[in-house]
Structures are given as C-alpha cells and as structure tokens.
Amino acid sequence: MPRPRLILLGGFLGSGKTTLMIALAKRLRAAGKAVGVVTNDQGDLLVDTEFADAEGLAAGEVQNGCFCCNFTSFVENLDEIANRVEPDYIIAEPVGSCTDLVPTVLTPLALYHQGIVDLGAYFVLADAPRLAGEYQELSLRAPITPREVLLAHQIAEAGHLILSKTDAISAERLKEARAYLRGVNASAAILECSARTGGGIDSIAEVVLRNEPVELPKSVEIDYEVYAAAEAEMGWYNGHIELAAASADSLDPEALVLDLAMAISGEVGGDLIHGKLVITTDSGSIKVSVVSGVIQADVAREGNNPAARAGLTINLRATVEPDALVETVTKVVDHSVRGIAEVQSRKERSLIPGEPVPEHRISSPTER
Image (cartoon, rainbow, N blue to C red):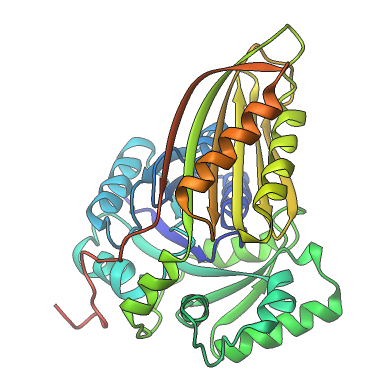
C-alpha cells in the first residue's frame, strides 16, 4: 500500500497554521486526494482538533507537549490515521512555540519509520503583517532575546517559507516583509498566501501534489536553555465549557463567540500572543482567532443556527501567569453568557510549558 506523504506546517503562534491546514486539506480533497491531520499542543482540550473534526477531516492529536518531546505519540497518531482512512497526505501542525523539528521529528521519521509516511514538505509560516510591523523591532538576523532566538530558528530551518495573511498587508509592506524574511533565511523557497481568501493556496498545493523526493533541510543549532526560556515566557490556558441556552433563541453562536473573543482581547490586551475559540453546536462550528488585536472567524457547516446547547473550547497563549488567565476567562465567560445561557460544566488547564526534552535529536541522517 502506498505510504501517505507527511506535510509539516510549522511557524510561530498565530501565524495562520490551522487556517492554512484546513484550506490546504480542502484543496487536496478537491483534487481527489484523501487527507488526514494531526494537531498538537502543550495541553489538552484543543480548538484545532475540534474544528478539524467539524470540517470532516480524520484528525489525531498529540497532547501535553510538542511532537519532538512526544515523538512516540506522534508516530502512533500517524500510523492510526494511515490505517484508518488510507490518506494520500497527512498534514501535521506542531505547537506554535516549537522549533528544531528537522533533527527531532523529520530525521527520526526518515530513519526509523519509513514504513509509515514519506516526507512530502516542510513549510514554515511567517506572519506577513507582523514581519512588516512589530517584528521590525526584533533582531531576528542576529537574535539576542529568547523570543528572537525562537522565531529566528523557526524561519532559519525551513525548507519552504510561507508569507501568510497577505490579504492584510499592502504590496509595499509585503515587499518589506519578504526582504526581512530573506535576511533570516537566504536559501528557502518563499511562497505567499492568504488562507482566509484562498490566495496562493493553489501554489502551495502544487508543491505538495508534485510528490517529488524531498531532501531534509539542514539542521540549525539552537541553545535549548534559551529555547526553554522562550517557551516559559508564556502562560497557556486550555478550557472547555458546556452551555445550555436560557431560552429557545437566546444562544446565537456567532454573536457569542465574537463577543467572547473581543472581551478576552480587551482584558488581556497586548499580552495576548494568540487566542483561539471554537463554539460547536449540533449544526456546526465557528472558530475565532485573535492575533495582535485582529479577530478572524471561520465557519464549519451551518455553525450560526440558534442552538439549545453548545460546547465552547478556548485556547490562549499570553505573557500572563496561568492562574490569571483562568480568572480572566471565568470572568469574561460568566459576564458574556449572562441572560443567554447557563454554564453546565467547565474543564480547564493552565500551565507554563516545561523545558523541551526531545525523544530523539539527530543532527544529520547519517547519525544513529
């Protein structure tokens, strides 16, 4: 049986990986290809998995740590999806604060698990508006701070770079973003896309559909103490809340999830690095993301029909203590649902990621 080809979508928190994953999966399915996905997070209760399920994708997930630190679980997920749906492609989205994927994920896969998947492509997304905006204040070409080291390493180890969210930036600023990106990685191919509008998706799908042999990108060294410090700057909140409508038409899913996103963005302010919320009812799902104060919504099926019950999943990454994130979410949710719905149950987890400890780290395919 032909092996599925693995498409890895890396990139920092909020760069648009999940939106691209869904858009690329739809494009590949339109070409007659079967597609599975694997999501990843430092915690559990994942927005991305829930939304992928709502889009009808065969989804697996690696919880409580990145692909490299939970490599065995990652391989098990790939194998399970390969056997369950016999996909042509599996798109995997690592944690947005994860890097060093060439020696810790791709090389071990190529050496020890050739029977499960073939490497199809390794893309790293870079947020074009951020590159032309707030990242201009960072020293990514000669990184110093932990955040700079993490961002620069993600870009430097990519085989293909994707400038994302091109619909949200002018042509002149896009040119500046491309030049800045090229200054960090001089050799990678650079593609551009807007997963929201569909612009550039065909070009990315074309790279995938060529099914050409892929040479592993060169491993780029990183100081793991600095890497750990970059992850430890952020508090993570993952929660799931079950809601029951107060009356027949009181629970408008779109209005509620947008109100929640705006309220959370206002409460956390500039400390919010990335927020994701998905509200799911019997008719569908609506996913909302918040990056740099910009709110974007995506709908799976007829997610905006009035509902008697709804499940709300929230994932936040912010330079805020985890306990404070729990307090913020509790306050915002209780205020926003007042008179609309009753909270039936809550599951919450907040944390600061621990130091990354990969199961494997092989700097070149010749090492054992």
